[in-house]
Structures are given as structure tokens and as C-alpha cells.
Amino acid sequence: MDLRKKNKFIIFLTTILIILLFGAKCAQAQILPPCATTGDCSLCDLVNVAINIGKFILAITGSLLLLFFIYGGFFMLISGGDSNKVKKGKEIIMNALIGLAIIFSAYLIVAFILVVLSGGSISDPQKWVESKLVCPCKSATDCPGKTCDTNTGKCI
Image 1: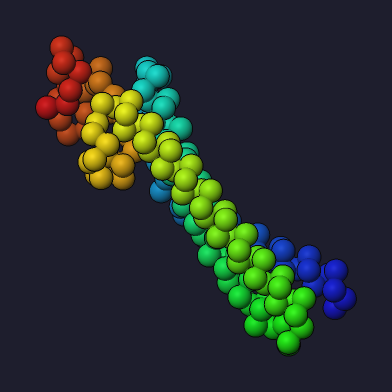
Image 2: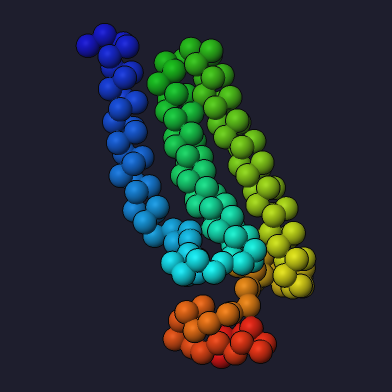
């Protein structure tokens, strides 16, 4: 097999592997809110959809980061003492680390803004992890297993 066919085959197998691995993650992501079936979504629900998409992208980028670490390490491992290949492997790992710093910085900035917008305390670490705005309920469908107090907009 010549090099081009081999590279195409490896890209094809990698694509199939990514689809299989992330297909289950896509199904579990629950990106859309419960109001998507009824059509009475508010701006708060739209913001939560954006948050869910961001969390999904964050999960995928973490997996890709691991693949780049493995690729860079493998590149260094098979270098056979060639300094150019070792340098390229180190560059791949360094670029992956820079990408990690950018991704987590963006996540922290967005989480900070969400904590401030939702009226939470910046010193509360649980709010940073949740990163979700609490939307007021409008009907019983917004509160699975609970009832909606339409006066206060809270599930009880």
C-alpha cells in the first residue's frame, strides 16, 4: 500500500472511531431543554442550550487533547533519534497544552459570567461547576416530579 492510500485509510478509521465514540456522547448530551417539545421557551432556556452546547464541545475537546498527547508522544517515540521528529513531537504536545490553557480559560470566563448573571456568589465552587441558569417555571412540564408555583416561578 502506498503512503497516500495508507494515510487515507488511517483517516477513515479514525473518523469511524470518533463517530462511534462520540455518537453515544451526543445521545446523552441532552442539549435541548424540556420546553423544546412544547415551544414555550424563554431567553433563559436559550442561554441554557448554549451552555449545554459549550459543555458538549468541552467534552469533545478534552478527548481530542488526549489524542494529541498520544500522537505527539508516539511521534517522539518512533523518531529513531531524528532531532527534527523529536522537535515536531514536542511541538505537537506544546500546542496541545496551549490549546488546553485556552479552552479552560474560556470555560472559566464563561462560568464567571454565568455565576454573576445568576446572582450567585463567586466564592461558591458548586455554582462554577453547575454553570446553569435557573429558569422560572411556567407549567408542570418544567418541573418533572414536582409542581410549579406560577406565582414565584419555582418548582416545589
